[in-house]
Amino acid sequence: EPILTMQFSAIVLALTFGSASAFMGTPVAPRAAKASALSMTTQEELAELAESNRDALGAGLGFWDPLGCSKMSFWTLSNEETIGYLRHAEIKHGRVAMAAFLGFCVQSLDAVKGAHSTVPYRGYVENVSPQEQWDNIPVIGKLQILTFVGMLESYGEIPGEVPHYTQPGGIPGYYPPLVGKRPELLFNLYDPFDFFVDDDAESKERGLNVELNNGRAAQLAIMAMLTASKGLIVPPLDAIEGFPKYSGDVMVPFEGQLHVAMPELAAWTEQTLAR
Image (cartoon, rainbow, N blue to C red; front, side, top):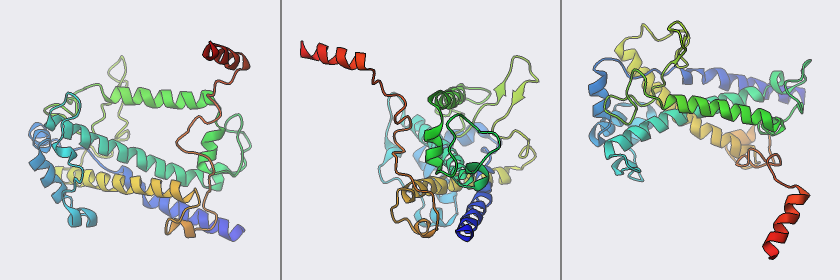
């Protein structure tokens, strides 16, 4: 059993550090930013962008749009604005999936899920799967997490120095820096340590493709992990001894916590319906 645990930990660490480059993507090069953003919101430039991404999958598929979404107009948006929306959504979902993938790996390590001298939160249980770790968080803690994420999401929709991603000149994937009341209070979530400030246009363009590719891979990977944790066959994950299993429902994040089950309310409901 200790040997199997060590093997699983080694695999998780390898996956974690091997996918760290997923966060090394960079925004579109500043050169001719307006012209670049405008051209990428057309169907023709969207196809060219896909074909220029020369990874193994991109080279084999090229421009792939089986549902024809690039020809649609969502809500009150024009077709070009819809393309900007879809590109931004893909980049953002890729980033979330990369964070989820790394989070699943880290939360499967003994250093995180094992015993702690100080309990991380009320209701902490040792040696459970990442999904069960979420289930064990008190509801007030979950609400704080979701509120914080919602605040970040709302802030990202506020146009800053760059126009909104659905508008002319907008850059899909751009997230404005967090600005305080004073100019020195500035925090760039995308590049907090200024790693990419001196990158040239070619490096930034390559970084964008790297981020797209890793984001797409991470979306497939996290879904595979969640599927394997239900005990289904997902090669090669189902062959890993000790892979975390979960019997709950990941689509019910507040299961058993936000139920309204007061006897008085139930009795009132029955009386009201009986009238």
